[in-house]
Length: 96
Image (cartoon, rainbow, N blue to C red; front, side, top):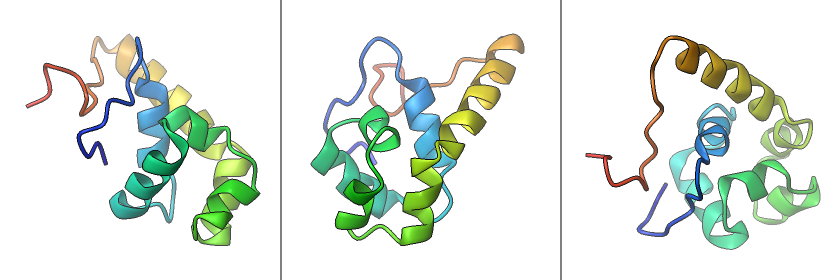
């Protein structure tokens, strides 16, 4: 999904995790959306028509629109942080 572009700000773990948790959004489509929209947060905060206009299946666009992946990501990120685990995104220097 990173495709050599820097979509990370200070900490965009929540947005990256939300993308990974979006049903019907595979790596290829996520990459296309990232190139078009610019960041994981922009995808998660997009209007319903934005993902649909990029040929994302309507069901996946609806899931994003109601912010279901962001809610699940917030819960998951809180659990990982409570356990002392840091989520590493593909744009961080520490990433393999």
